[in-house]
Length: 91
Image 1 (cartoon, rainbow, N blue to C red):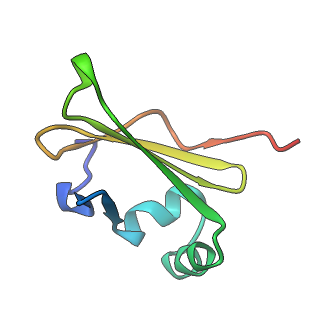
Image 2: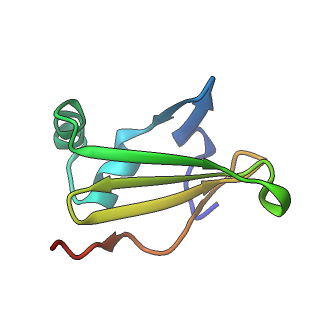
């Protein structure tokens, strides 16, 4: 679980809810700044549902400017961080 509380991310009816105190530092923001940037449409997320051997898993990718954070929600609700937060190169 990488030390993340499983309730930090909830997926219900296709909507993803994530605790701002979990996501914000991984994107280099404070929770307040994260909320502001989200309202401005500058934080993006992608949810991918697993198939075949990944059935029951959901991979969530969050992006803000050149930063990316990826976490997998396992079938039991535990969270697995996939690599450290990475900075993408901007053109």
